[in-house]
Every structure is written in structure tokens, then in C-alpha cells.
Length: 179
Ligand code: ZN
Image (cartoon, rainbow, N blue to C red; front, side, top):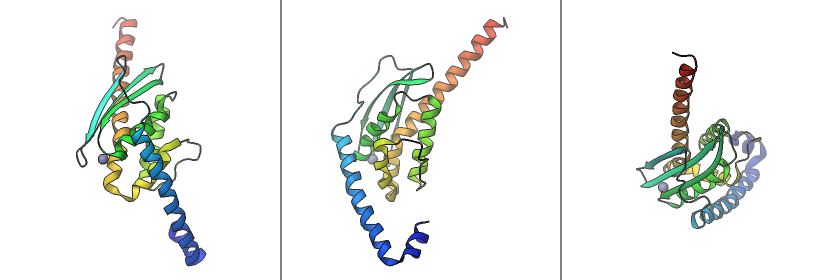
């Protein structure tokens, strides 16, 4: 796609595109550093329905997420982590997007982030907020795992939560039907 555009537009257009990317990178860097220095949603939730943790052994990043889920909505999010700036900033940016979303909406966001890391343009109807700054990370495959740690942990936690809820629902159905 990019090759096609720059090929048709000539070398000047290609250079202009490179300059734009460099400027974007500067902006991305600032957003990432700001979240790293002043993370949002840092902490723990004693009454969380979802508690999940994971690590990225390639870099030594560690991450734990607590989510309070009520009536299918993410009510509150907190995280605790250790590691590099990308992993910790990603957790802060990702947390910002979770509160108020339904569980299926969170899965949709996670798919969009996985796609973004592979160079796919996200659905324009999805608001990624500051997470868009992580698009710059995909040029560095080793750092993609740092960024992805947060949504991999939350995805795992929500899947386990979904399975537990399904088991409870089946048990209560059996009780109601007297089996
Ligand atoms: Zn890292």
C-alpha cells in the first residue's frame, strides 16, 4: 500500500512521508514518556472480579490488572507493573480506554491493538485515544511484546472470568430446573 502511494507520487512525496513519520515519532515519544512518568489507573482493587497477571521475559516486564466488572461493563481498572517505559505507558494508556466499556467492546479494542501492532489500520469508528501512540512501536518487534503485555493480560483475565460466569450460569440453570 505505502509502496504504491509513494511510487505513484514520486520520490518527493516519499521524502515528505518520511518527514511526517519522524514528526509523529516525536509526538509518540512524548505521549509514551508522559504516561510512563505519570501513569493513570495505577493501584489495586480489593473487590475486583478479574485479577490477572503476566510477564514478558524478553524484557523483564511484569504486569497485574484488577478489573471491577458489573453487569457486563468494566466499572473500574487498576494496574501494577514493573518494567520498561513502553510496557508501563501501554498499561496506563490501555486502562484509560477500558472503564465504561462492555466486555465484547474490550475484546474488540484488543483485536484492534493486535492489528495495529501488525501494521493494520484500526476501524475508524474505534477511539484508541493515546493508544495510537503505540503505532510507532511496531517498527521494533522486540518492543511490541512490551506494549502487548497489558492487553494480553486483560484478555486472559476476561476469558477466565467469562468461563467462570458461564459455569455459574449453567449451575444456576440446573438448580432452577431441579436437575
Ligand atoms: Zn519492556
